[in-house]
Length: 395
Image (cartoon, rainbow, N blue to C red):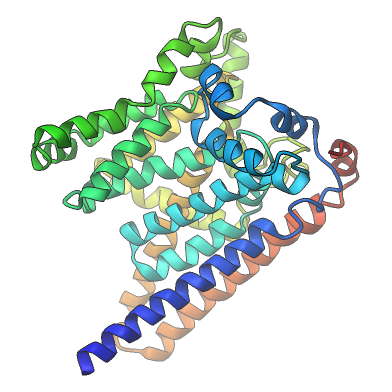
């Protein structure tokens, strides 16, 4: 009876936690979703009028996950207004936040996962991208999914749903312009795990299902690649190249936007405010210090590849968005926070007061960071004069 009671209690706690997470995500991503800006931007109007459904996907299969979500929502609600136009982005944003929390739990444990996931969910950039009807949210999802697939292949390969889920995500990632380079890099870094998975699921039908899940998306992408300009876009390369000096300047600007000041995207961001607040920036720098000391580890190599290729593709001025590297910056911050907590708790292994003070101070910093980012998005950006000018279209 004690074992049964304990099992039921654990299950109830899990269910309760999931309910709380669902409520918090719902409040963050749906609160004033259709009324915060009192209108849509020109980009969102284009998104709302772009063909979806089978016809739209067949003629333009790029950004497949968000187009599938839009097809479902727009089919169920043909006369969609501002809220429903943005709802698919909010749904994919919720998936991204949950995926990032899972990633942090696999890499750093429950405590760090909880703290960093809250910071990630409340970050102003994540809220902007997840509540704005454009394809930019695909890169936020892609950057998170790439890291999560890497972690899952190293930790939970023996579970069949992880194996097929990882292959499916890799297949969907190939529908995002520019992500083919990262998929190939991940396949190379995880070649041992992929070979092991191929050996574990060696039945003919298992291998056939795996190949279809991984390469099925190419059945739509290959015919589209022969249309004018589509191949370059799929590769993440612009149709027109700037001068070498300007391109180098834009590549350097990627690092500046991530660490010092944000880009001037008034439809998506507030002035030149930094993407990471002071606390998260310090944690990210501490994470960079940790990974630099262990630069030969596979995880460090993955992050280096992600930042190098990502900066080049973004600097070229193609379709690849800065949102691709935001999850990687938070992964660095998660490592920095975990490293700092580890050092503090190791310094006071038997002093409960000192341990609680350290965790409490981190909690206060996390709370302050969340409040700052929420105010930056829901108050400062929403009521900025230029925001009112840009978001003036109505449906």
